[in-house]
Image (cartoon, rainbow, N blue to C red; front, side, top):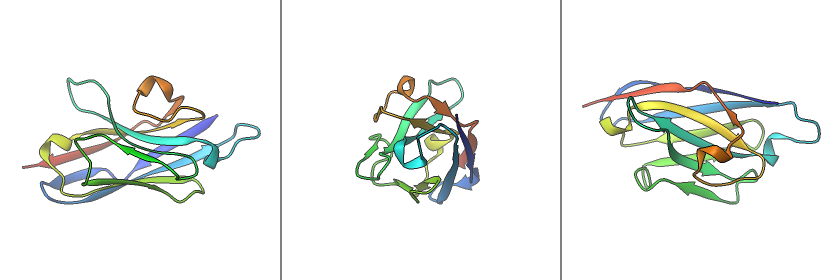
Length: 126
């Protein structure tokens, strides 16, 4: 079992920055935090959940949605936490942000991620 808890969301103005955190607790025998690929997804009201960014378990690879490239940065402490640094926030970034973990998959498809957090709300006012 992998438990994920997001934090760091809030209400900010356009152009501001936020840093989201996702704390992971791994209790699967033989596996550690580093054996999971981690990702952030988001879901705005009335819209489907969409990929934001992903980082491989050992940090070798990262991937970003085109809409956040150059503004968002995903990182990991390789211990139990993954971060999403969000700069130059726009109103269209408003959504619930979810952390997800996958043992083998690495990519933008939500169906490939086995474990999910409950999400943290990010609201960007214009």
